[in-house]
Image 1 (cartoon, one colour):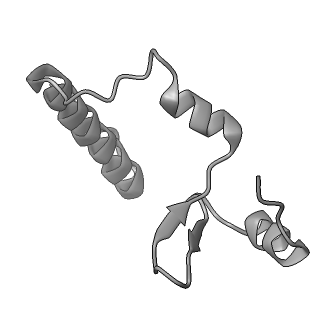
Image 2: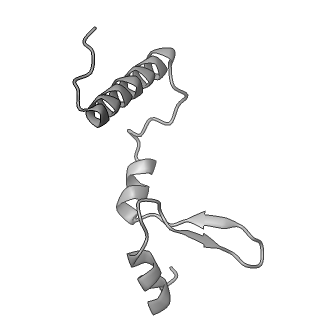
Image 3: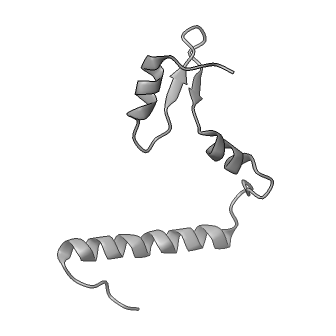
Length: 83
């Protein structure tokens, strides 16, 4: 295990929504730093990283479209059209 320096701890405290990245200066290889909880969630047995089915892609597209309509209607101060 590698322990962080005080400078690295300060850098981690100031990151936004994106996970911090670390670069190996010798190889230029980039790493993404994740909290243990997030890593365990992503590597858990019940995590499904298989390719999306057509139904899953269509559902995601529909949800994105609905969200975009709500956001646009909210910016214009009106309710989205009902189908």
